[in-house]
Length: 365
Image (cartoon, rainbow, N blue to C red; front, side, top):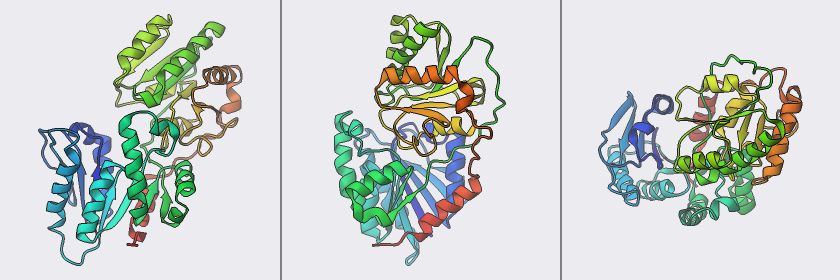
């Protein structure tokens, strides 16, 4: 069987081929006879061989608007080499631009169309965020009913899809995002210290400003605590300025991009997520597996991996007072939210078995 993965969102091909991404793609490729990945990239990159049966192809597009058409051209070249009669699956990594490419290739080559959904695009917060998302919303509504099978990363997304498209339920498989275990040895906080950790991109949907506003209220009441935010993004400078304006510059650490997050999780007393929407929430999942209480908005894995009042607290999106009160609750009674035994993470082998099974079960129509 041949599988062609179509993925957008990787304008820098070197990001696409970071060690973790490279290893994950190679592991996926090993599941099938022949595997190819096409990434939407800017110019200047070459084809990379990730394993004997997995190659990654950059589009080298002059603009992001041309990337889908460049991916379509590359896909035609790749699929024209597949022996006649061999089963082919084309897997779009999103129901938007990637699905545009995958659906056209599947139709031309008689391949099976597999679409993955990693974000809750039916959430009103997603649709209203920017004009591109309104176009993506329309694309998803068009392409998903045409998929032979669909992979979603959370039960929340499956429920959203089934409410909109009841006929799609039998085609949907729930398979959360797997992440590598972190080698964490928990470090007890010094007396009077309370370490709040965020691992997030600085983008509008992450609502980092809400986290800063909530931490301001928390600090004013407790005069304790430190907020560490690991990540980069387009709003980093704005958030640094906001922290300065709120008088928090000495209490908030902007740690930038970090390849190794273990030390940050080891020192954390609580993990904070303030997003307006999520598909899953890998960073929050890592906190759960490390036995760290999670305070998060009602998105992604909330209600699935994070249970309100058990291993964390779930708050409404944008409710700064509720986020602040949740942080107070963890500070006042930390043991209430810490499991005696951290949740066991699924092994990579079992995850890959489920991934392979989902694709092998996929049939046209």
